Image 1 (cartoon, rainbow, N blue to C red):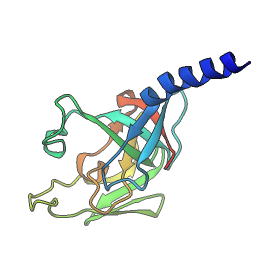
Image 2: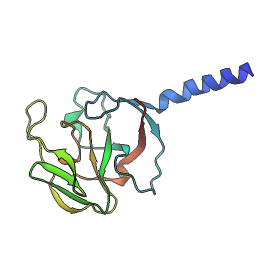
Image 3: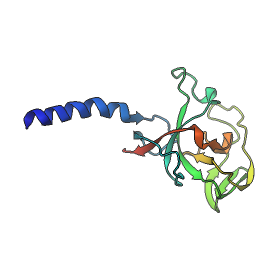
Image 4: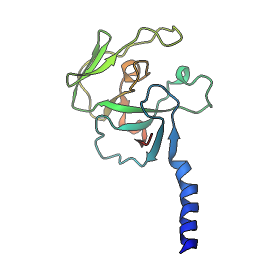
Length: 155
């Protein structure tokens, strides 16, 4: 019995670290996430944390490990929902998703994504929790094919 418990603890110790993600970004309310498999055919829920590949992220990853082009954000607006992004504000189904800033934390001008309509099939509008989060308010829709995993907040 003790050997079985020791073996289980050892296997958990080997498995768990590979499933944890620690985020130091202030754009999220949580710091530690459990990476989970992603059911591609399932519609993603608003508020769900997803890990996705974003190619045009060089300026937000300066100083980080090369090839680190994954972001964690929440689904802010889903396919078929009404999205309005303009006049420095964003809302989905009439619910505020925050405002767009003119400059980043280093004073560089930010481009703004603008949209007024129904989110197209297979597209998602992703948001962070912090007002300075670099998210879909600036870079636009994320295609469902870019999602890699779900992120379950632990802490």
